[in-house]
Amino acid sequence: MHAGHAGHAGHAGHAGHGAAHGGGASWRTAAQATLHCLTGCAIGEILGMVLGTAFGLHNGATVVLSVLLAFVFGYALTMRGVLKAGLDVGAAVKVALAADTVSILVMELIDNTVMVTVPGAMDAGLGDLLFWIALAGSLVLAFSLTVPVNKWMIGRGRGHAVVHAHHQH
Image 1 (cartoon, one colour):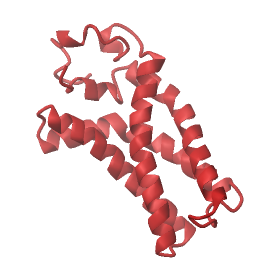
Image 2 (cartoon, rainbow, N blue to C red):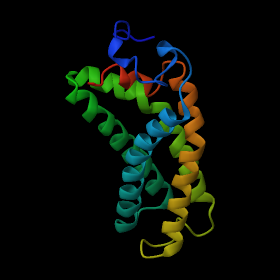
Image 3 (cartoon, one colour):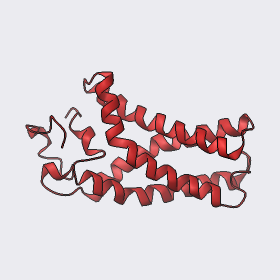
């Protein structure tokens, strides 16, 4: 359990924020948290694939770059929100790591597994429809399979539930 959760009476009307708020997370809350994660992952994935292709990187290097950028953008989006709420940079980094690491990891594992296993997807150029269809499909599948993970984590006061302790309402 994280400090600062006690006495957050302002959260009483926000059902589904976690076990500390009276039960498991709602599917809606889990989907919203996953959508937040997907946004950072998609930005990083697309930018990594574009840069990897533009620089002629090997497929493995392109995947590594995409994963790194997905984590950077995922964490950055969370940090933006908690910094706005008044946390200092050190605390914001800790919240982002606690909130997003598992979600991004699961999403990236699924997303990149799909991209690597779809025949020709990684070798397709940015102008090739196969690349974009495979990437879109990989992100949809990653979202679908990560929602239950986030629901489970939020319901236990972990993952994205950590962010809600710091949001302004």
